[in-house]
Image 1 (cartoon, rainbow, N blue to C red):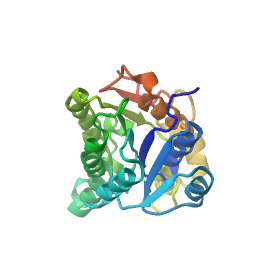
Image 2 (cartoon, one colour; image 1 turned 120 degrees about the vertical axis):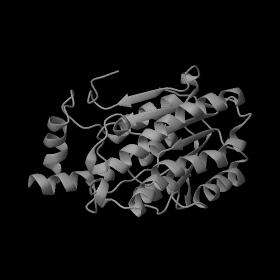
Image 3 (tube, one colour; image 1 turned 180 degrees about the vertical axis):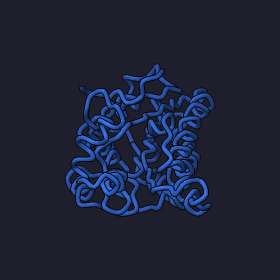
Length: 265
């Protein structure tokens, strides 16, 4: 489907892997001009840079200066920003409320919440007045379904979902739509990374493999109606639709893409 994104200037955070990489790849297929923010360049992102002209900006978006650097680079390259995809996110296992210290809470909130606050704050002046300007924030079903093993991540994502609704109200007069996408379990490095991925933690607890966790344990234990985890390109498809002119009448919404995990409204 043509989403009318050709030549749109799009900033994507956390673009080197997972959902961010899938979003970046699909944007290139749509003919958008993508500025990809990431701490590092993966081989997959490098391929998009070389083959499709994606501008890669190395920035730590969890640090105070990272978002400003990314936005400044986009404006210098293209003169403004049409779309912002706030995708960057990460977590680490929590050790209960008594065992999880302030440093861990700060790390998780910096990357999942304050990165969005800072990137949006920096980008809005460059988006105001641009026809079809839109922001999509990637949150999580954990905003509604908190889990003790990632309590700080769940809390940060709940704050992010709430922030999206506030931003939608504030920025509507400026012609900027703001929506949220809330995935359930997705086959991304957030789950599968050997260093702290959710699936690795669960695999160790269940004495099984990461593949078995993703293919069987997670869908069964979490009650995913479709019986499988979501793929990154599926989240990318929803994200691009909400960012596109085809969703011009949608703002302040939070769309779950969880395979039927959450059973309530």
